[in-house]
Image (cartoon, rainbow, N blue to C red; front, side):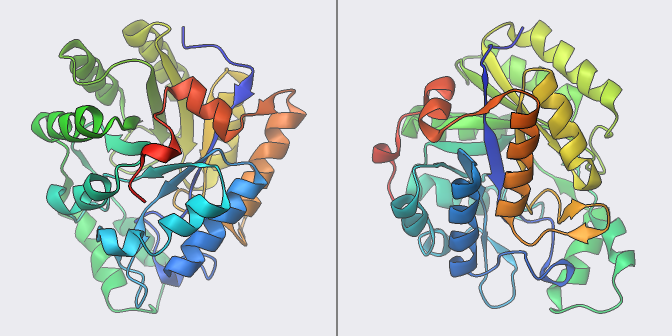
Length: 312
């Protein structure tokens, strides 16, 4: 069984690289917007902030460390939340671009996708007739033909560079059952050491579907592979965000919300901010009789190095 805790860690994925500016006015794009929404999410109860960067002019995803540095220090000065920087970047980025930020900034945590996959965003195109920026439609339609690369060599490279080189712990993003076995292989080879933090992801086209039976199966598989040497969290994409978060809490897990994963706060209603989603998740957690973990408690649970050992 997974490690037991009476505290629930809320991760907030603030902007990501899935949704584009046309889709929601609330999606943060500029460094100021990302900083403001990240701080708001932390104030609402998020212990971990999962962060991507975007080009301020048109919202295009970027891995440029200089852009990250336009908002990371401000977030760190304003909140004690754990800052978790992506190594996924976007499905269109080369691995070197995806690693540029974390290599320079040495965060406490970074995400790590645990396998190559189809990552289909192209069905979203049919929902929109016009676009704010020229890049958006082609970016989304292009995912019909590309593979989101995360080979064993890539995974090992990131484990050595960030885990051994920087003392950074990983949010292991598992989009399918095979990704759990990839991670177990990495543990067997010494690439990763407990405590392991799993992010079980449901509802992305190309990954496992958003069915509760799949959540149960993923959890049983993780128990079999990792025993009690791991903690886990659940990400339900789109309309599955809050139902899967609720089920995860009842099963003893942690939750991830944020505008990277869903633009909505309820059926047909766009969220006004990341903080609104975090506040809703917190209400659900507390109404179910659990407590929300503080950043200090999350650091202890996940074995993090501390904010004083980052480079921003």
